[in-house]
Image (cartoon, rainbow, N blue to C red; front, side, top):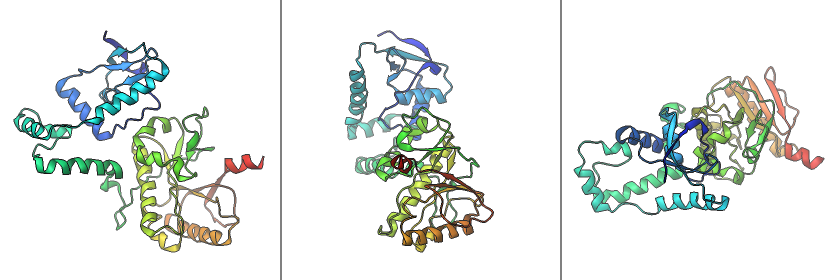
Length: 340
């Protein structure tokens, strides 16, 4: 196979790449390139789309490479490309290490700190299994995203979403983010949870997609009245954590605030600085007197605790006195389409 130099600006990641590449893994790849050189060309198709090597591409981009060594896979059909991308990633993940040989090899390496590449140099056979299980747990709960220093300084330790001081002209749902040609809008998550649960499962997969838009509202994970309280806390936490993560990736984020009964007020406004622009929804409130009562009590508490500079409201107007606070309304597109 012939190796050719390709300008990094001309290379296009595969938009539907299912493989996760965490920030920690990219740092390890960068360390490997710095220590051992760039020895593994990226595979491209005839249109400069990455078939294999997304992690290396991201690492090289962050290392400010201008050109990348690549090989061409021009002989694949579109179906073969999709199948090969998945098969290659799956086969790389399918097997681990021979534990005894791994421990011997780590103990024999003196010139390099193998911890920089994710290995525990004090590893023993007994705790190897435990360490592998810990990595799986970290991935499941996104513990690699946690930054205690950027969390609320109280019992709840909610991640903080800073005020980006931005008001979008229009909003579209996350379910259209991959296909919408209109990019001068914000992305909202006022949808059924199943439509965006994947953002929690693989947040890094959606960075490039969401960066194309003006801003996002943090995910609106559900707070149903009949949910156990720990689930309500968990869903508020997840909304803040994903919002903070995307903000750290350079995406403008507006915090979405939601609540249930008054007991949720203890934690559901945490992680939002005073004076922020915030977003709330009126969906499902207008036709239910009890829901309206809870919504009004929550807005009262929001105004008292956050003192927001602007409130963005998705779902239509309700008769509520916001005082001097600026209010911006956005139509529920689904409802509008049904009316038409």
